[in-house]
Length: 353
Ligand SMILES: C[S@@+](CC[C@H](N)C(=O)[O-])C[C@H]1O[C@@H](n2cnc3c(N)ncnc32)[C@H](O)[C@@H]1O
Image (cartoon, rainbow, N blue to C red; front, side, top):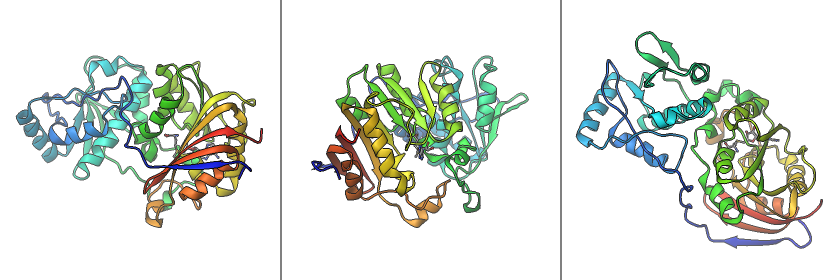
């Protein structure tokens, strides 16, 4: 621990309100050929999950009776159709493909069993650029009926578990954190303490879903991840002009004092324990003296949970004290909020540069 590290414990706050400007609109449009749509209470549950998550944009069908009828048909048919609204389709194709994947995953969780097939009904001609991206999500063009995809498991069997993060990203369909709409809990903490215009590092940025929320709010975000596939996809999603780097957290490719804030959403807690001290030294180095790190580290999880993850890990998660000590080794002030599953940490006063 740094000689003067102060660790402050705070009571956990309520999950912060949704990100500004985002409105979930669930939807579904019934009817048409053999098309069945997701509607009704199930969709509203899904829409609740998606509340404030801009990635998915469905219209909510208000008529409950009609919803229930179509839902029943959808269930008995084992087919669910997604009908993205036109506002969504006017976005860049990479964003549409992400939204579709997110919707499929979220709705699959809601419906659990019994689904055989997804259909995607895109009003109007399909953007050619979208097709290969949707193919990555498992959708295929089906004559006369638009895009179809058979329902697949979203987890890998034990034997298929990947040895490296690069291998994990080889099948984007089965990467669990890619289906969390937004990490609002951490992002809201950063937003509260970081003015727009600030330079923000997204450590272990994955597909860039968190960076994508910050950029339109005026933050200058750069991201890094150890997986080249994740970074390639983030590049596609975020577009040109966002600095993204394939890099190990223990050797960041930025000069000292490059960032006003850093985000650690899921990176430090899943890397090998012996690499964490070097990674936090790097974070301290690339932050300005006033720079702040916002981190969320999961507590260690039971073996059964680990076995369900797509990656092999021996060091997953840290208890609150260990997480605070890790950051306290290179920051002079660490504020922690512990919840049963995770510790939120805000670290200030980087040292060791
Ligand atoms: C749980 S995922 C979270 C991804 C992203 N932050 C999000 O919220 O979707 C953790 C990420 O950290 C990356 N990662 C793991 N070990 C890393 C390391 N040593 N250096 C850089 N990135 C790493 C993984 O490739 C993965 O993308």
